[in-house]
Image 1 (tube, rainbow, N blue to C red):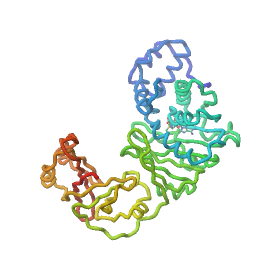
Image 2 (cartoon, helix red, strand yellow):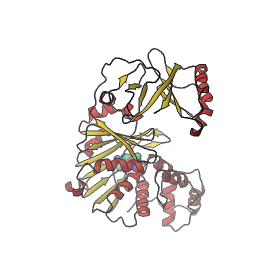
Image 3 (cartoon, rainbow, N blue to C red):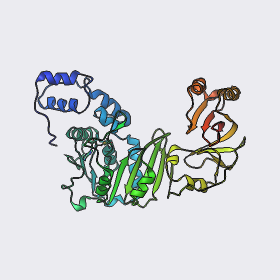
Image 4 (cartoon, protein in one colour):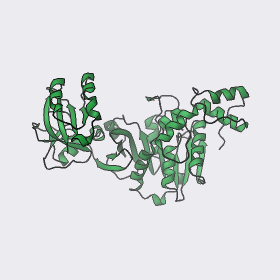
Length: 409
Ligand SMILES: C[S@@+](CC[C@H](N)C(=O)[O-])C[C@H]1O[C@@H](n2cnc3c(N)ncnc32)[C@H](O)[C@@H]1O
């Protein structure tokens, strides 16, 4: 690939770039590549690239380390999440007739590598590109490191929306991950394309997917882009992404819940139903208390889910009463109510004194104060062998926020 490099600089300058551990990002990389071309030896363990390499290799487990700047590593998709996103689509469509895959805005390439691996044995051409030359070069390098024989792959420095190199028959599937982040913040620089533009571009393909940040408003997405299915992917207890799928047959919303190693635990899907009035049910000691996982809370499927599993609403936000014999419905946790009290330290202390096992603190929209957190710290560290685990759930209500002491079911 003809990634343009900056002109040669003096040896002094290049060794400074290489040896200065505070220099991270694109500059360090471009100059390293320049040095390589000029046959100047640099010590690869030094210099700013190190941090990015460490970070990206936490997101993917491969025998050979991948390259990335810190910024690219932060933006790269965790490979287990990418795997589930792609599998979920390709097991529902006929991918045997797929001849071309387009991956513009490839970044360091974790999504691209995962997708390539999925189709490795099939004859599919991959068109991979990024607007930023160093990023495109890194992605190509990461491919070379992972697949020694990825001949059906073309790399380009190109604007995602410039598809002059694509013919109509090339538009089988495209994947786009345009969101840019740095130090936990979203960036709004020249590399951040507008969502409408992305969607319009992707709809020129037969099938397409887009990765969006976990904070996107699902309701707005459904309203603005009704031809798409929106999937919330939660890994352990964290929402990792919302991805849009075009050209499939799935209902408008899907939820995928993965465990911390990336295995699929549960799926749930449906069409949104607005909240309906339902009478509140009192919660009594011994009752089954059910709380939804974060992805279910964020989705517009809560009413459908509650009706389907015949759960009654309580006076507390996002806290339902289940039938006693019921095991956990999908995407939720079930508990038995032991005791309920106002969120005050003394009654909580008194109640916990009677238990020897570990205590987990969860909150449904109520922030625990520092004193309570300090008090509970030793309880978090207790071992399961010493007694059954309990959960202290802080719940919000119009009348009075409460702490529910619960036993896991
Ligand atoms: C979030 S990163 C992609 C990360 C990637 N999915 C991964 O797993 O490593 C977004 C990338 O989009 C690129 N980008 C943004 N706007 C673009 C455009 N108009 N054309 C091509 N690439 C673009 C940025 O340079 C950046 O590398």
